[in-house]
Amino acid sequence: VLVQSQNSMSQPKMNSEAASNTDNTEHHPVAIVGGGIGGLVLALCLDQVYNHNTTNNKTTKKLPIHVYESTTAYTANAGGAIGLYANGLRVLRNLNDAAPNLLEQVRKAGCDYKYRRWMRHDGLEVAVAREDELLPDLDDNEDEDESGAATANNTTATGGDSSSAVDADKRPRGGSFGLISKLTHRLSGISLSSSSTTTTTTTSSSSSSPRIETELQSLGIRRWKYQQVLYEACIEAGIEIHFGKRLQTATTTTNTTDSNSAKTLLQFKDGSKLTTSLLIGADGINSKVRNYILNPTTTTEAQKKSSSLEEFLPEYTGVTCLMGCANVPFRRGICFPSSATTKCHACYYPTRVPAETEKEEEKEGNTDDGNNENTDTTNNSNDNNNDNKYEMVFQIYFPSPIERPDTWRTLTPDEAKIECQELALKLREDGWEEQFLGPLESTSLKGVLRVGLRSREALDVWHVGGEEEEDGSANVGRAVLLGDAAHPPVPYIGQGAQMAMEDAGTLSLLLGHFCPLNGSGDDGDDDEAATIDLSKFQDAMKVYEKLRVPRTKTVLGSSVQLGKTQQKRADSMLYNAWRELSIKAQVWAYGTLPVMRPGAAFNYHTKVEEALKELETTTM
Image 1 (cartoon, rainbow, N blue to C red):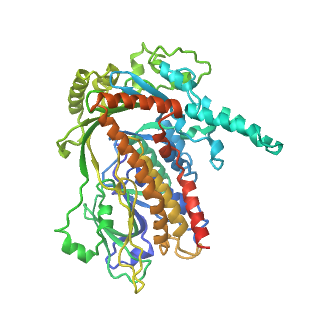
Image 2: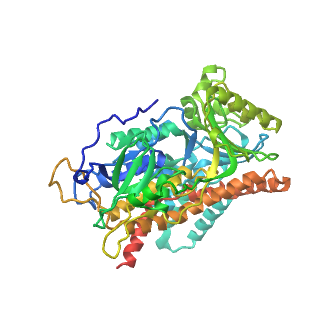
Image 3: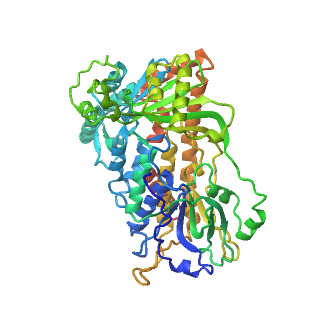
């Protein structure tokens, strides 16, 4: 157990609002329900905006930030692993005051992908792309922070662990079409007038070695490690994490006469309760906060309807995933083998490699001819203990029409061994290459989890409350969603966690802009915490939903379609052949699959600034 329950920790001092409650129910200006990735990132983002930036704030007092997590502790080896991409890592990098070393710590806890591989289940390598193809060129994004910039041709190994990887390293950035575009741009610059000579020269130089932000390179990381890094950053920032707090109901308190004072009453399974002026739901696909937003009730109404209300459960997709990790060497990069004979596909990626392997990859002049398919693993191939330096994650998706939620959980070591061996046997009979079966049959199996994939419709409205009635009162407590609570998680494009992180960054910036802290300097009781002016909460939500609803629908919709193509490859030999040819052609033409770029290249901060500037222009 990494983090013990903090129920016994000293409670924060009660502010004046809390003291005004007749039943002494604790009150917080902001309460985040859900201590997963989205909730912890949001807590840090709010701390950055409210407690480290006084531009729009009227007080130097700190905003207390509280996170309520349903589990009793964060534990090692719990859950699977995730990929982090540039659009999500950018949120972490922008926490330069609240958690200045956060991005560096996350990178140390994970492992760079370097390559993206599309393979057939029998071992055929369909295509390989450099992972830095997902990073935008800084020359096209002049406002980006260039502190972590490097030229693209220095970010991957000059050799490779397969001939396809060598080809990927030699491929021009942006693929063949990218090269043609750059050449066309350079040739068109020749005809410019002499006054544009300087610009032409700069473009030519940058096009030969485009600058990218290597600190935003995609990486794989165990979920518990990432959560632990975020948790430690929250504790260092003074954010309160409350464990063992499973939300049962959220209801609006009655007798509010001020449009800025509507409160929401939270009641937890352990019997505790509190009120908050702003409830933020980061509590996942089975969100209780989402239920409140869809059906906001007062405390009195809830008591009458509690026995008749049915909660909406997400729908089972018919696909089950077995995920886990093992200490086995593997080809470097994230790998997507797909079966051409059964509706089974998988994803493999490293979350740890030996330090000496990293050093070897960074050496210039690596002349490996690519014939050794495990170049990353040859440094100490005779040392059996060397395998412990590797950590490979597997996620295998297979059809399972019978819904059995009672079996969706972390497996015991004995259960994991039996199930993984049975699955390996089935895959071997189906013709899967041995490299994909190694992790399943390894004695180092750990963190094995079986989970059924569920889905639910994405919402068009992610908030409730803030609307004024004719008499000037507000009778619904304010609440807003982010992450899986607002939009369905889908695993096929690796953007589920990134969307939650983008939500967190966007929401915090908009709240900071429209809802500053109340107060007038340092006057008043030092024990009194700051509160938020929520009078413009509706304005913040309009921009939030305008930015995030279309964005998440587009990216996650692309992921759904990509997942369907994986399932369809076994339905038709002709379709499978066409799909493999399509992947190969797209990687040749564009450097990687274009469907991946809109997710990773997105800059949430720039989009918020553009939206606010547009709003300012239209209201002038």
